[in-house]
Length: 509
Image 1 (cartoon, helix red, strand yellow):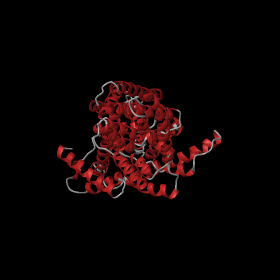
Image 2 (cartoon, rainbow, N blue to C red; image 1 turned 45 degrees about the horizontal axis):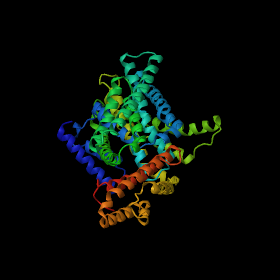
Image 3 (cartoon, rainbow, N blue to C red; image 1 turned 90 degrees about the horizontal axis):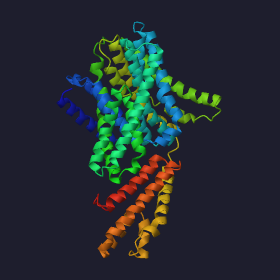
């Protein structure tokens, strides 16, 4: 892909995304449809996925951004379903697809059929998570979906590497394959945590918001490349680093948190627009080496296998939980949504594109991976919003928890007033420190206009109270009484207030 083509692709993808957001449409799905339509135009065959760029440049920041916004504590609370969907289901799907592919195409060696299974096994939950958030999916299934999306790519890509090694004859035997998998997992997590710890130490000592943000943008690429060089899972390294830094973000500076959120939101929109646009444009490359539509029935059969295996697994897991552990089964409505969020995405196509062209059944793998990816995106992606609305799932109760968090923070601030407020500030003016942000700023400006000498004392006291409020919010999260997402929302309000106090943002509410 030339520079001019890349620029054209980026501009076009952003334009389609802007149209989708304005019309309240799912941007990933519209990008795929538009890309498919453009792929039939003359000269559109130059847009080809580069697997190395996608897996090493595009995927790490997307995973890292999702990890930063995720909750380690919430993941820990629902670790069982995340591991079962993100690891066990991926392995089962890979073997089921491999078996069906081998039966339908006996000329395809078993190792190659398993490789195809590993390629199409991991769902890309970007679209599912976006739709779920937009329609107010309950926090429990949203946490499971997000956690699964961060784990399943690592599971599938590790299995993919094992299958490639088996085809090349570099890895033989069950023990060798299992050791490859274990090493990838352990090394990936270890590298991610080490880089996360180093990055956290650096950003808490730099005292430079711009440099801290630049460092944050380097982290996902460093974690991925170092882990891959050490034969670990680069995906798991990125996820581990992101979860660690996201969990410890309250210890960073307020300006860093504000800028980091804006930066990664922008990066997410740009990269997601780019990759979903590329999926549709892949059609000419996929049809390379395919004569007619002889492979279409087999590819559609594999699409059905991918969808059915997830449905059977999700509902079968619930039945087993009730029989074996005597636990109450999750709501069938939640299970229905989770079973229908198996859309495949860019990881599947990038993995397929990375297979050497001299591999037996190469064209078969490319075509089947494309049909499964586009088929799940359009079939499940289009119907998922209807399913969520039809089931009338309860909305997340964020408002009550946010109100409680604000009350706790305000109470903590008031308890510190007698210790912090200087004696020179009149008693009747001390109550302004417990007011809402916009009221406080108005009263602060009025006091400073009356007596400019008080500005330093007022600002210092308010910043110390804000620090105490953040401390209380983090303690509530650690105690399990406050969700990470709610804590970050309330903490953002405190960060904005401090930014205005210190003059970081000149606007006044």
